[in-house]
Amino acid sequence: MDVGRKGVICFLISLVMVAPCAFGASSVEEDVRQIAAELRCPVCQNLSVADSPSRMAEQMQDLIRERLEAGESPEGVKSYFVERYGEWILLAPKREGFNLLVWILPFVGLVGGAAGLYGVLRRWKKRSGAAPAPVEPAYVEQVRRDIARDQT
Image 1: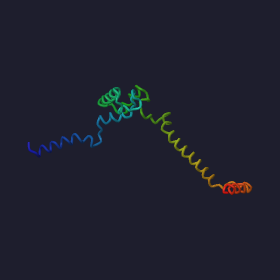
Image 2: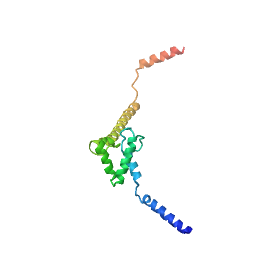
Image 3: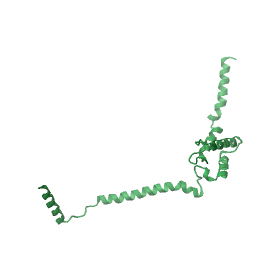
Image 4: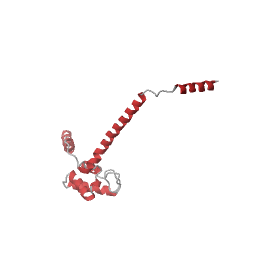
């Protein structure tokens, strides 16, 4: 085989290997990583399955991989874990029903806090711009005598 044919064959092989990624087809490993990042590790609880070093997380990733290779959709895989462990297994709760409060309340709190801060600053500005209370002339005279006495 001459060099030209080898080059064409290498090009075609690399094209076949790279084409699925280039056209948006995600690999199973990418899907496993994405799903595992959305699930809570039952052992570590503060880490996702993707980030957890536990043996349980490894087994869950293997199970995710098996189900995806069997043709199950990513949503179906997540549903399997929710059925088995409950919604607790999801790191981010679903945006529906009572869980919607988890997504909305932080924004409501932020807006409420900003409105409260605005009101406090507005009152503070009004107070600082007000004229000082009048001072009695007798008090001013007493302060002048005290200052003169202290200077001597």
